[in-house]
Image 1 (cartoon, protein in one colour):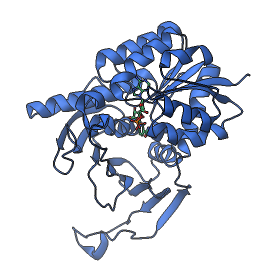
Image 2: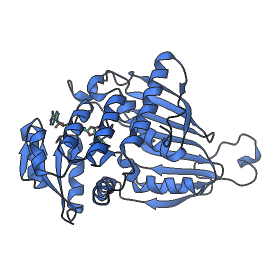
Image 3: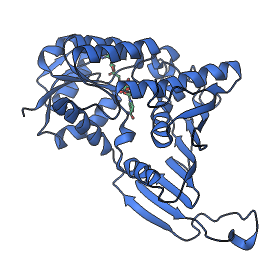
Image 4: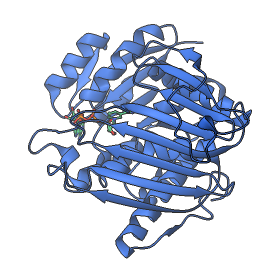
Length: 354
Ligand SMILES: NC(=O)c1ccc[n+]([C@@H]2O[C@H](COP(=O)([O-])OP(=O)(O)OC[C@H]3O[C@@H](n4cnc5c(N)ncnc54)[C@H](O)[C@@H]3O)[C@@H](O)[C@H]2O)c1
C-alpha cells in the first residue's frame, strides 16, 4: 500500500500539535502540501513537515493530495469540506464539524456521494486512558455508573481580534467549541440522553462574545447523570482535565492532565465512621493505578492512524459525521432551552436514533 498523501489546510496553533505525529506514522502517510491564507505560515509548516508544496489558496493543494486535514476557524469548515469532497479527497475535519445542522448534513451527504471518508477530530476518543475508562465502564468494573463528571479547566485568552473571541467564527461559545468533545464522550459512555440543562456565563472571560464558562447536566435513559464543567477563565486549578465516574462500588478517575487512570475501591459494609453521612477521605483504601501514560498528546497519533485505516479499509470512523452531528444537536438543544429558561428534551438525539 502506497503512502497516503495528506494536505493540511490551516497552519496555526493546532496544526503545530499535529506535527509530532507525522513522523511516527511516516510509513503510512506523507504530508505533501500545506495551505494557509497567510503564506508564511504555510511555508513554515511545509518546511517543518517536509512538504514540497505550500499555497495560500487551499484549493490549489488538491492536486497534490489524497486526503486533507482541515484545521481552520469553525465557520470555514463547511465550505472547505465541501470543496474537498468535490475534488475527491478524504477529510479529517477538526472539531466541531461545522456550525449548523444544515452545514453538518451537507458535509455528511457530500461524503456519502463522493464515497470519501469524513472523520471528525475528537482525539479524546483515542486517548488511551479514555479508551480504557470506557472499557471499565462497560464491564462494570466498580459496578453500575450513576454519575460522570468531566472537568476541563483552562485559561484561553486569545489576543484582541482573534476569531476564537467571536461567536460567529467560533459558532458559539466555550460549550460549543470545547464542550463538544465532552458531550461526545458522555454520549459514548452513557448512551441515550433524556433531558438536560446548560447554563453559561461570560463573567471571568469578558473577552468572549458568548460564554467562557459553563455547566451542562444531562440525564440518561439508564438514570445516570452526566456533567461537564468547562471554563476558559481558570486562573488556577485543582481538577485540570479530569473525568470522575461514580459507580455503586467505587469511583474511576481519569486524571488526563497527569496521565493516570485510577480505580478508587469503595467501602463495603457500613459507611465510614459508622454514620449515615460519613465524609469520605479521598483514598479510603488506596487507589489502584489501572494505567499510566506519558501526558504528551500521543493520542493524536491514534486519531490519525484511525483515519488512515478508514481510508485504506473503507470502515466507518469511530467519530463519523452522523455521530458527531448527534452530539452537536444535543448542544444546540441545550442552548435553545437555556434561552427559554427550560429543560431541554434530548429524546431522539441518541447515538443510534437520528
Ligand atoms: N482537537 C483539539 O483538541 C483542538 C485543539 C485546538 C484547536 N482545535 C481546532 O483546530 C482548528 C483550528 O484551531 P487553531 O487553534 O489551530 O486556530 P488558529 O487560529 O491557530 O489557526 C487557524 C489557521 O487557519 C488559517 N486560515 C484562516 N482562514 C483561512 C483560509 N481561508 N484558508 C486557509 N487558511 C486559513 C489562519 O491563518 C490560521 O493559521 C479549530 O477547528 C479548532 O477547534 C482542536
